[in-house]
Amino acid sequence: METGFRPGTNGRIIPRNIIERFTATWNGAEIFRMEMSPAIAANPFVSFFAVAKESGTIGLRWTGDEGFRVEEQVAVTVG
Amino acid sequence: MTEADHVKAIHVFNEKNPQPHVFDARLGPRNGKAVVATRIKLGDSQKIIAIAETSTGQFWSASADVIVTLAACIEDIT
Image (cartoon, rainbow over all chains, first blue to last red; front, side, top):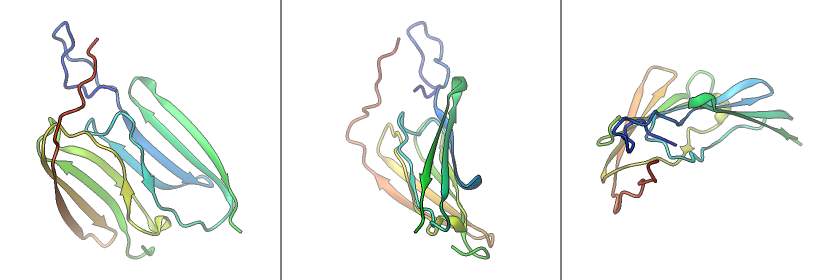
């Protein structure tokens, strides 16, 4: 990760490289979203709550600088 | 956290980093409670401010003094 505020050895600012956005969906409907600035940690462990109403799929998507994009899907069963 | 009255966003700011904004969390009634946790970087001891925005247009704020004993975010510059 890079904050975008630090100069490198050549004196030029190293371009920012952070995770900018995290989105959580439940069966396709967005339930939580977070937009982050460079003050976020290199590894921004995020926790939040969600009311489990129906079984289905939780989708998690992280996007960031330099084309960073990771998606995960988790199946949940509500008994 | 009902459809009519819920916290729709929590905004977090710092005092001394080069950029005050830390993160915005967008919430809704599906969250059940307006609690978010994450990890942030601070270069020095300072005050952290959180502002909660409700669906009824109210803003609530709280702050916490955070003591940083050592600036540890010194990564290898290549």
